[in-house]
Length: 192
Image 1 (cartoon, one colour):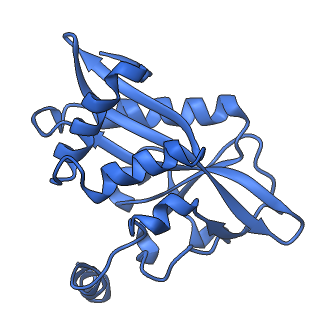
Image 2 (image 1 turned 180 degrees about the vertical axis):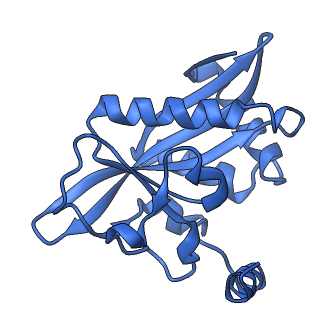
Image 3 (image 1 turned 30 degrees about the horizontal axis):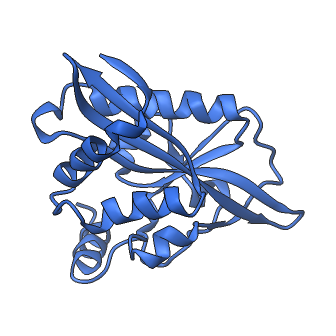
């Protein structure tokens, strides 16, 4: 498997992987978010996993900010992470996350944030953003899902509220909405 930057001609195929991974139509919210990130200049990296000549996975990194007391700090947001459904469970996502973190480190970013499963991302270098002093950009992000990986240029003063780029808000891809949010909160409350 090779992981590399997506080529312009591959964007439609990468969008197809994203749509399939999220169970959405070709023009679903997550695909529209990736398009809006590119169009708005917030996209910083778009990596793909290729095996046997086929694009099987994609991960995006976009610009965000931490509103720290001292100054606004540019950080990266990992979203979306997508693996073709027939290739899930074979390490493709893990390899894409590792490549995204290496890309972020190489760019000098101090941190990478995401919304996701603490079980999955916790094994891949991420931890609780709240426990490290960061505030979620929305109350609709369940606290356990607010994850961050701190990189070598991070400094202890770089804490505050995470601010997403506009594309996350205009496509309504921030956090969860009811009834999904209500179900997740009930699971958290019950400890299951």
